Length: 386
Image (spheres, rainbow, N blue to C red):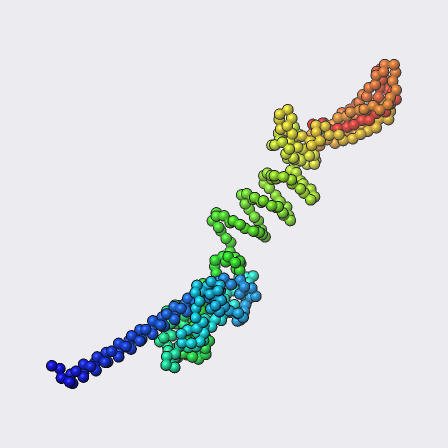
């Protein structure tokens, strides 16, 4: 049998153990609450990072900004899809979540693509317990939030210190312990080594797309050379300067030039050509235009005007001999002459002749059947034959 004294000792010991267990359970529950708060603030911080990424172009449009005028609220983060559910506007101990951001450095510009967005998110009141700053609870919240979180300690309370002293920041609440603050890192400041879909960042180096395709490109501007194995356009192709092709240029309909179209001086009459209706200039640089024609089943370069190109007309005013100059025949053409009578007088032989001397220039006569020179008029037409 236990004595009364022994029973009292047992009861006191049991009471002490119960008290300790209650305190430990309360501490455990409070730690769970702190962890949940830290995780909640981490979700908000991640959503804020997404918001900066989505709104980066608008944020940096004006260059550096010391304090962004209208940072997002938690409701903005929810309505814009960064937060998937509505969140309470502040922590469980009271106050609200404050968001502040800036754009820098002071020398950055949107055109250079070197602006960064810096933001902080923090409860407007420090964490307290029984009216006393709760440093332990603040550290538990920061640890649950992650490396982006820090808190102020009793010593040097005006400074927020990140986990393991990784970073420091000015305490936005002043010289107050147990203030909690989250900030963004270099991967969540909008500026990125990756190509932004909204076009807010200029590229800083040459791009190699590794032989894959770019589809649905609207406009493509280039200061230098655009090289391609094939270029297809369903609309117009315009160039303010020269357009050069190493081989064939083909048009399904009409090719129109506002001024001139130049042909290569590559053809020569009676030599082979590539295709019917092809055009070229004579290779002697004379400017004679040639077209590819099928003659007796053979494709040959020939003058556009045909096998005879008429050049000059000379009036023959008497039969005594008139000088007719020869044409300058380009591309190896042979000069020729045709004389057509207009009026004449003849003897009873009733024969009219138009003899010529020379191979160009010529002297043209008008004679009768006996070879005697007679009066008359004629026209001498000169040409080049190919």
